[in-house]
Length: 549
Ligand SMILES: NC(=O)C1=CN([C@@H]2O[C@H](COP(=O)(O)OP(=O)(O)OC[C@H]3O[C@@H](n4cnc5c(N)ncnc54)[C@H](O)[C@@H]3O)[C@@H](O)[C@H]2O)[C@@H](O)CC1
Ligand SMILES: [K+]
Image (cartoon, rainbow, N blue to C red):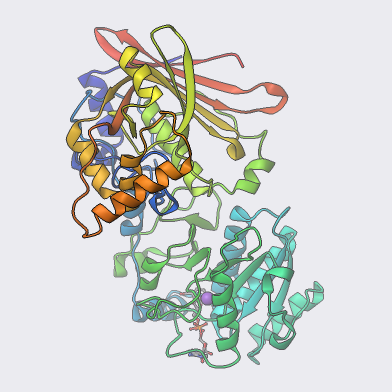
């Protein structure tokens, strides 16, 4: 059993152990919602949907000692942990100009004693490892590696070989072969593994029909100008792939070092260009990587020696364990398919969870978001009226920080009636694909009027009108009643004037007194860790206990 005691001593210990955590806390502003830049509404229109939160949890570097306890935050006004660790992590890693990248290349292969084959081998291995970390073999075995004429293409040839040995089924498209022994050797190695080579002309127009993953190894940091044939057409095919919305049917694009065709420093200049799902930066990300918005950004090339690090003042993340790649910029993303496969494996252990249940919630929430779950902020809200009669419904979480969980609704609704009679409520998040559930219980109060007002006016006008039209939970004679009322309001506010927030509409905040994190396990031996509040030495502390499944 663990207890997190709120006292100055533990805070001091924690601040010594994790100074970065403390400085982040101090710089975050109060009243910010870490998950959401601005609050949102319940039952939104598609346009009103929650944007993927930019923030990510701070990650403890491997080997960071665990603090013995974490103090509970004061109730209100405390600086929240609303730090964007994603932004912080991305900012920490150095991004290179095209010239710096070329210079580093020269120095590695000059005074620092590396050979090109060596670096290419390490680069290609990093790419294959990163691919295998994200895309499970069981569902993504068919890989097409498109190789360009330079070293970026060479990285692709090496990656194809490693992917083959990892169990994938790579094919290679290598239209402009370089007649140097290094490259012809790599080709021979692939041929001896019976890896098929496909000409650009023989590729199907719909690459997703034949392949689950396309490795884009056409151009790296020496690219300039606009792509010449046949790469112009190949890049165009990947651009068309990028716009397919149904990700189930779309092959994933993995770009090696730089999305081919992107300007090495500016990225996509005209809004077109490949939109890779994954980018494996090599040595250090190039400036264009700042424009990468896909879910998986990795760094590969675990070979940079101190002279280079010092000379260029490189900030590079540590590589975990023996890995040749490290994820940068974002929290580890959990691939939904892999979660299904791993259904039984990840255990939820007392020694692994955060001392603070808010931090634990935010970690799981981040993982749910980065797994691509639809509306991970959907939660069942249960209220109980004064007769003890419960009622549940799904609502959308619109903000969470250490002050509590916020959602918006109509103050005339049944939940509002229940809450006016009995301010206790329960929230339930269920992330089926991750086999996880979080229960939160606590007391509820309305958010300040200004907060509701601010949020109301941040919504699309259509949603604002909808909120006025719906006298939630009252009986109406038909749908046309709503449509008619909506039309009249639309007319009334057609001049674009401010739509006043109705007084019967606003937010609630649940302040938790209990959390339970549930992780499904094999043979129903599920993990259940409960956080409840206890008095320890006159202070309130979160107390973690394991419950029997
Ligand atoms: N030290 C490093 O930095 C390492 C670099 N490696 C790889 O090497 C890459 C750089 O390799 P290179 O310098 O060979 O360059 P690239 O592989 O980026 O491309 C150069 C080739 O593309 C052609 N090309 C350039 N612009 C073109 C255009 N508009 N249309 C058609 N062809 C065009 C050039 O003629 C040349 O043949 C990196 O991006 C990375 O992938 C890795 O192999 C290992 C480590
Ligand atoms: K590339």
